[in-house]
Length: 162
Image (cartoon, rainbow, N blue to C red; front, side, top):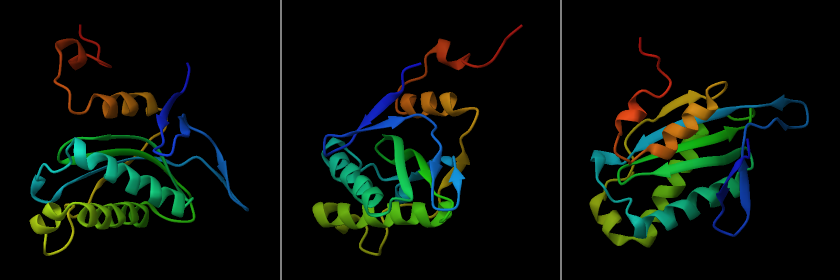
């Protein structure tokens, strides 16, 4: 199977396959599926805001090499990410960094978002997190299909009917 790539805003590509990473005293393979939504499910992640949002995520990942974004899909009111997180930090601070920096970026570039959320964060409290391992392909397909309508053949994927 040929690995797919996620185009980086600066022109380079990141390979999307489970890989083993190393730090000074550890070797790891930590891959997570992360989902969070906009506060009050407001649909402001439109085509004109998505690029600034993506730039923010990649900027955070560049600043913190412990976070590596492998894949993402953004709908109007929620975000799906497949990320690697080094064992030196837990998932909660990694998600907090991504959400906080994206919030600052989007509010700075789009005054209407600042007006929508004058009290603080643009994201709902909390997030969903699951580890990705043997079922990595299923998670990838799930992320890719977000925002599309279900087709009858998609509903049977992965299930056997007798």
